[in-house]
Length: 100
Image 1 (cartoon, rainbow, N blue to C red):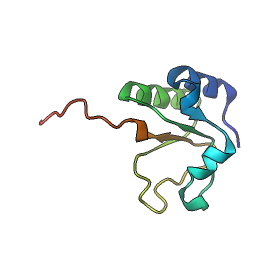
Image 2: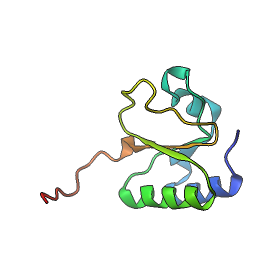
Image 3: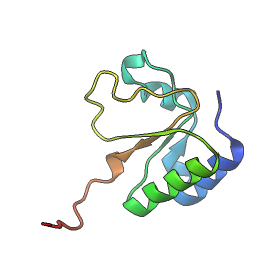
Image 4: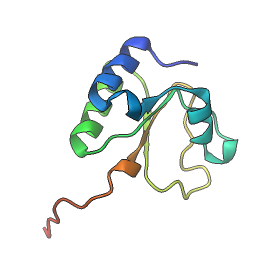
């Protein structure tokens, strides 16, 4: 299944066209060990504000989403063909440590 065109455009506006993809080659390589279903799209946010925007947009369009950072669990990335994968690999800096 493909992603809603309006949702894809809104995600592209938030992330930039280079950080969102629904290309089957990209969504296939992001499915865990190629045994779980392909995602509808893969989003690469850079900060928490972009993650929040992705979640809000997915909720508005009633689209499931799945966040992932390490891909270590065998089926940790399992989604559905309607799912937007939020790949957190671009979030690679610690901005603040709150000891509380």
